[in-house]
Amino acid sequence: MRTPAPLRFPPNFVWGTATAAAQIEGAARTDGKSESVWDRFARRPGAVFNGDTLDIACDHYHRFDQDFALMARLGIKHYRLSLAWPRLIPCGDATINQRGIDFYHRLFDSLEKHGITPWVTLFHWDLPQALEAQGGWRSRVVPEAFARYADVAVKAFGSRVKNWITLNEIRCFTVHGYAGLGKAPGAAEAPGVVNQTIHHALVCHGHAVRAVREHGGRGARVGLTDNCETVIPFTETAPDIAAARAHFVETNQSILGAIYGGGYAPAYLRRCGADRPRVTRGDFALISLPTDFLGLNIYTGLTVRRGKNGKPERVLASPSYPKTDSPWLELAPRALYWGPRLAAEVYGVKNIYITENGCGYNDDQVVKGECQDLHRVEYLRSYLKELHRAMQDRTPVRGYFLWSFLDNFEWADGYTRRFGIVHNDFKTQQRTPKMSAHWYARVVADNALL
Ligand code: PNW
Image (cartoon, rainbow, N blue to C red; front, side, top):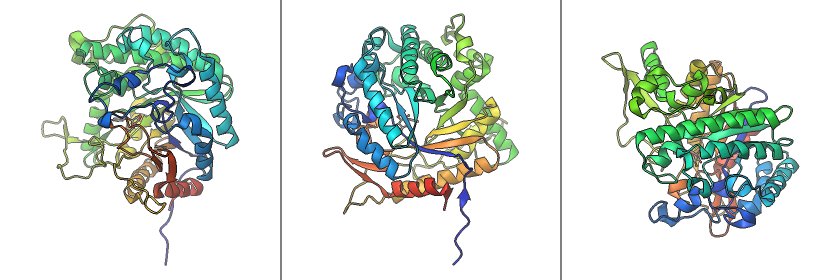
């Protein structure tokens, strides 16, 4: 019988997996690490499902060498991880914790030994609690401290890390953290304050770019990872595409629009009214420093058509439309076509990496040594087909990182929501590659979807 033609990816396409320090490391008080806002938030009754904490997580702090051996056996050669600020500078500012630096050196040694290239996120949500106590993202204390943290991290690891990601998903740790949407620090502030937290995060992004340029050494590259609102045209015809594009521009004005536009768009400022962010002289010189790539975390999308009044109009799915077990994660494979394509067209980005894509389910189980996650394989296949289609249409996507390597601490959903291609038993810390891991290993080895 004839086998279907494989969907081939270009040579040098980067295939990887992604994690974040707070979600896998555990060792929450080991070797001088201080409390993060998530360590604190998880102790608030009702904040995290089941009262789960980050104290042990996947115990990756003590098991990274075995974890990277497994990654290498699966043939995965790129790995996105994050550094824990509270490990490196426990008070948030000033004093460096050498044991934290040493830990990441051991971790990078192990990656090197296993032939895996690190892609390092400087900030993936674990703000030192000491900085939250001084106002957190509401205050310029954070960008000032972050500027020094970025210098420390890039100076310490710049000889071995060449791919830097400044911040992960600004919207999640600002809006979701400060407007009562269930993420640490669990604050509920007025809109003006929330807009200011976004602005301070943009300044941090700029400082990270500056730090990589100043201390990153030869070949260093840097970019932001954003979870922009991904807008999908209902039909792929000119009117719906124009509507999707208009909606994309508008909803992403506060972050990507500001970075690539060199300032806040007048339309955004008009919508903010009196709640507009206060900008300090020099901020946008930093914020709009050129970067080398844009990272996009894409899980789902918003479907839009051209409404009768000519304006973009949302098209909703019925409650029975398929979702993963994360209520926000509706299946939307075309998000991986339209997300990168609109970002490239609207902002003129030349290099895009999908820095996260994946799906969370509650009931992945190991039965007789095997975890049959057909649901995840079908999810990934449908999304990767759309990514391939985007690249056929010349969208400049250079790589893809699957979230996540391991089941881990899924923030307010605790350990129930499993995003890994490797199953973790949180009682025994036993790792078992799921069927999706073996399937993904084939994709990586073939550089193609078969
Ligand atoms: C991302 N939403 O978070 C994060 O970068 C990861 O740390 C996380 O584990 C992963 O995606 C899976 O959730 C998101 O509500 C959390 O739209 C929530 C949303 C999007 C991304």
